Amino acid sequence: MGIEIAGIGSYLPERILTNADLEKIVDTNDEWITTRTGIKERRIAKDGEATSDLAIRAAERALKKAKLKTSDIDAVIVATITPDMFFPSTACFVQKGLGMNSAAVFDISAACSGFIYGLGIARDFLRCGTYKNILLIGAETLSRITDWKDRGTCVLLGDGAGAVILRNSNSDSDILSVYLGADGNSSGLLFMPGGGSRNPATAKTVEDRLHYLKMEGNKLFKVAVRAMADSALKAIDMAGISPNDVTLVIPHQANIRIVEGVAKLMNITLDRVYINIQKYGNTSAATTPIALEEAIYEGKIKKGDIAVLVAFGGGLTWGAAVIKI
Ligand code: UT7
Image (cartoon, rainbow, N blue to C red; front, side):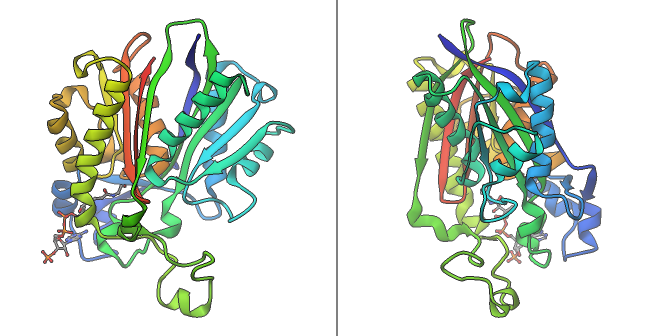
């Protein structure tokens, strides 16, 4: 028995922030952002709109595609680093918003790799028979932890959500492999120092701008290319297939140059790599399901095809999954 995506949906906030808009906020320009990152615009959640609001909309679309009711869902997993609150989990707010009154619900924190980590967890729950229909969501409102005075990060990030419903199936569809990795020793390259038990919120932490995402982009760049290519190749190997069997690679969208570097190391041409960074920038855990939904919608992958999902992010964390659609 395999595992299938019974339904998939995504939600991107309506508000578009273009490179021209950013030129008015920080010392940057469209030419730098486009050539160094590939990003043209990103989406920003409305005032008062939280991560769970985005997640709920994506989940509703996935449920509709799957022709399932909320009562059919027996587990909700939300991958996010921008939860509505420290607690309860964002998954609890999603449960409430969807009008569900049972199911196991929890969040996972693995930054940009969160959705791939979630796929691994969901696959094992399904294989063990613990749950039947799992709603897995990647959702972020990175705009809430973006330092709009830091041109090194604010041009990169955006908001969004993507959701899948996974279930066991007699069809050919399956999650063929999941490979996960991490290096906590490099946690200082991408993190948000303020607000947790290390630096609880005070007037000083606010004044010192500790409640914003901090990133050493240059150092991350090289690790990202190597870790994503390695992860993808390991997952391909674990699945018992070769890179030639892969219809489409769907990489995390942090930087177009990272994506190109990964494709080169994997010896895969860019026409077999999905890219939507120009529209949304880096939406962390939401990136993978949003890109997967678009790739399916655009017909770039269809039933029977093999896709490799691969991501890298804060932690540092990385991972890849090989799925047969
Ligand atoms: O989500 C997963 C984790 N994230 C990543 O993996 C991100 C990885 N890193 C990157 O994508 C890239 O390193 C960045 C896009 C963040 C930066 O690109 P870069 O080519 O590595 O630029 P840099 O940091 O080496 O900066 C080059 C120059 C600097 O000026 P000087 O010192 O050479 O005069 C920066 O100050 O570009 C400057 N710069 C900018 N200029 C215009 C940095 N940000 C900007 C900006 N606009 N927005």
